[in-house]
Amino acid sequence: MASGRITSCHPDLPLLAAYSKAIVGERIAAGELAAAYVVDGKPSPWLPVWQAQVRALTTLARMLGLSSGAGRL
Image (tube, rainbow, N blue to C red; front, side, top):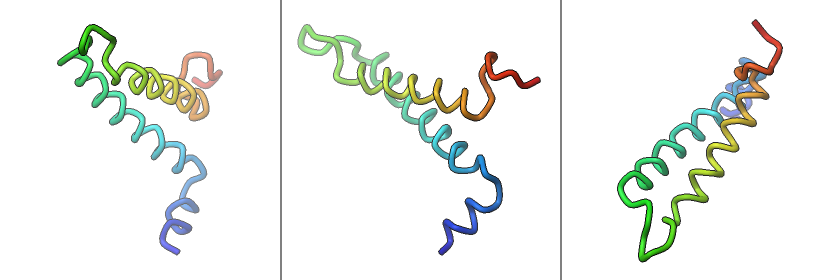
């Protein structure tokens, strides 16, 4: 299986792929929010999407050791 070869290259590769996808999702949602933060007098339906992507980025950054509290130099 091709994915087995890819993930065996480096143990953090699946986390890095998820982090990359979360960055793209956050940027798309942020763009949609910038275009229309309020829709029909209510917050845009993109707001919870953006919030979820930011939470995912925070979690994945911590898991990858990218956050300042990760303890890596």
